[in-house]
Length: 475
Image 1: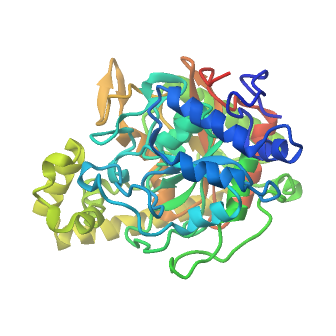
Image 2: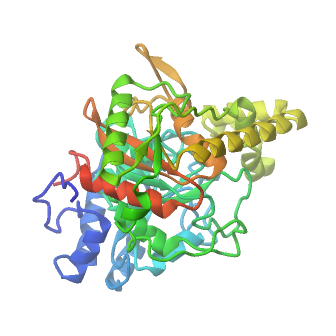
Image 3: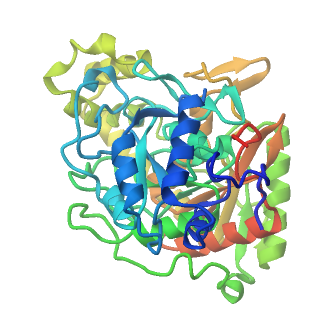
């Protein structure tokens, strides 16, 4: 059972405030129609102050909704597409002024599969420039606010998707996660955010290979919504040579791992060995982890040491190679069009990155893989915080201190980046609130054990239902 904040908001003059699976059922029972839902969605976006969408394609959405087959998995469901994901004919800006006039010439494999499953594409959700920071402020789009409190960050880089779903504008939206960019905003906005095993959902066409940390997926209100997205979007595609073979039955298998989970070992390490956590967050994670262990019959193993080395400055510099390739001969003349942080980083990289630095990156990455493998030699599941605190002020784009607290994207990354570096599945779920803002935890498993991780997330969801939307959602 999940909690609807606005239990009376069932009329089609406001968007659906339940999860996506229940919206499809409402279509099938004719409680709602796809066109009515779309019009409510477009009206809510028009009046929203979240700045969650950077582009709306109302004509295409209306045509798709009018022809929707509600027997399909996402039949008639309005959804948002993260603006870093290419859709043919739509803006292809990468959230940057540099490419403000560029248009997509193809549609990504994941989005094509979701469209084939009947979903209605409303438009593009805001993101950080080139996905480079875990924030939601760009020169192109301005600042995106958190649906729980608009003055606070929605996180990034999938911040627009997260706040659109939490804010009651759409029930599901796409996202990408190269260092926490699904899980961080999901944590800040009180949503489910699953980073699957690397390659679970193909990233083609024109897949960028390096740095082998990026996965894609969705921002959702429930675990079953995430599983349905996996049912539709996952599976091998030849245009992503690292994509994994298809597995069916993600949604159907929820709740079927009772015997498989009982007796498995779990380490509850709220700070993942490195992050600086707010005490209230650490206490919530410990309590939630113990609750999940009790419900699922897991055996808690204490004193598990997690010492995944940070890849640091060298890693950040190495990751900018892809950005330089995309900018091409526009760099450095386009420097003033970039956000200050991206311009500064790219300048440093072009001036200082060399073969010795590349060697250090590979050495540290190997150490990180070995360190995480050693942890999973001892336990089957790791539980930690998703973010070290609740959402910080939306204008913060670099690490700073607010009072005695350290806030900013780097401290967040200490909790999420390790799963990207080594490729493990990790699912963020909401566990409570601090100062009226959501707090979440991650459930991390071994490679390819995504279904087990999702089943644990589902068990916690049933034990501790969370609000599906923020209190500010339209009612």
